[in-house]
Length: 232
Image 1: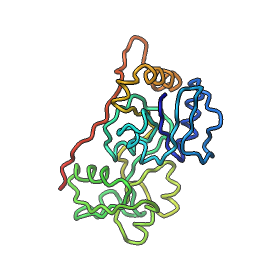
Image 2: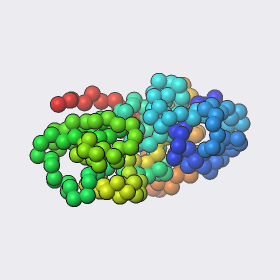
Image 3: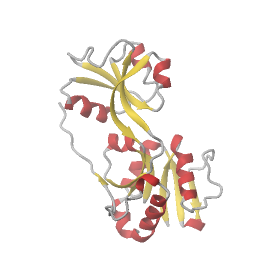
Image 4: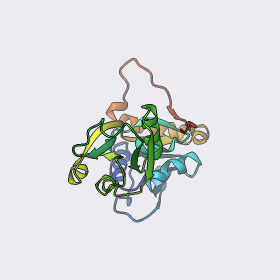
């Protein structure tokens, strides 16, 4: 039996729809369900419903064989998992934002305060540009930080930009784009190769962007590595 970790929140409805389109009937499991574990004997699968930030941990350490999570979470955590599929849904961007009137080049000559729930991504990004930063880790209401003077910039996930506009903020830089990814535990891909590869093939078949051009070949899986980043 395969154990699949799914993200609570925005991604779960699209993830369940993906499984249904791939031919997996999951009766009784929905985005509104309060159950954290759901056994689907007809598919020989168990689904775990967990926080998005916990999906890579469950997969990396073997609590789940595979999972669906946003690329932003993978970039922040640098988890040691395989990443064979970009599922295409949940599209958004990791962006730097500032108050209206403070352009991209403003107030970057000295140390900049960055409020974010993505400290690793933020530090890597600004360090690569030679900009000294002080990272302030927040878990929510990131948009308030520049408004009350807590930070000069924020780094946050942006979908439509409406929340930024509501707080008089504008995007000044885009760090990366993010979509939902299907990830797999390294040991599981060896020990449960047949059912996992069957699942990957069936999911890939219903994700148009994952279908390779005629005559081309695709590597079995892309690996996401943990990296030790130099801190300055």
